[in-house]
Image 1 (tube, rainbow, N blue to C red):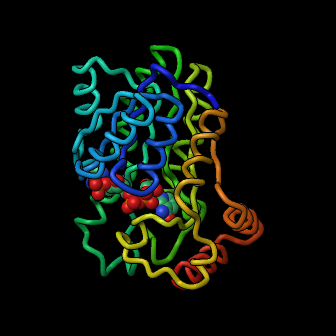
Image 2 (cartoon, rainbow, N blue to C red):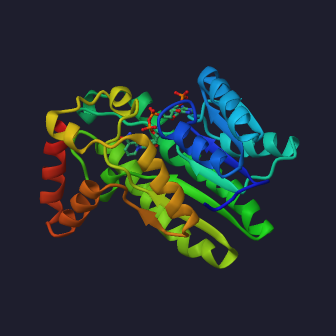
Length: 261
Ligand SMILES: NC(=O)c1ccc[n+]([C@@H]2O[C@H](COP(=O)([O-])OP(=O)(O)OC[C@H]3O[C@@H](n4cnc5c(N)ncnc54)[C@H](OP(=O)(O)O)[C@@H]3O)[C@@H](O)[C@H]2O)c1
């Protein structure tokens, strides 16, 4: 197992789901952690667990990431504490399922802010610092839904297509500077995601759903293995492969139907 002793990792969305698993996997590798999300209580509990089990330092920051400008704010907060980030896990995010025109415009823009704009701000400020220091890792949470248009998840899937393309391009741009950027593309997984998104998990989807731990582990291993992108799970890999064989209109029709259940 690759050691990250003495390094600092920042995990956004560390109050539930994949974020908790990323924090545990990084602490197992002896990284110190900065945990960020709105709900501090679950992060305080997680911080206690990680300090006790792995003797690492953990800082908890309660922050709403749906505001413009939070990236530089967080960076200057950490600069003030003397913490330089070596591993950035841009995980915080949410989905919104349903008819686009029936959704709240304010909620759609907040989702776009968290999933894309804040992720971009954080990547910008921390990757610049990593380049100056000669290395680092950035993991970006994209999605299997980022590979095609998805009726019912129109805006959400488009945010994840952005993350995927942004990540793959940055992987090449930053490689010469020793900074690895990796996009993780999970399929449906057993976190709060479907409930927050308002998506019913149909019996077909239940057969494909993954537990969050192996998904997060695939992401950490791909990031440490310096890969550009990874799709965790056999079914998800097959789905992405079959997609490539279909015309794009058929891809989005099929995926839209599967997601609807
Ligand atoms: N589970 C899936 O099926 C799936 C599949 C593909 C991709 N993903 C992606 O995986 C990432 C993690 O989601 P998850 O599945 O672990 O879902 P989750 O259990 O609902 O966790 C989402 C995390 O994001 C944080 N978050 C949401 N809005 C925020 C805001 N405005 N400010 C700060 N933090 C915010 C939440 O914290 P607070 O509520 O405490 O703020 C929570 O910690 C997301 O980017 C999601 O799009 C999930």
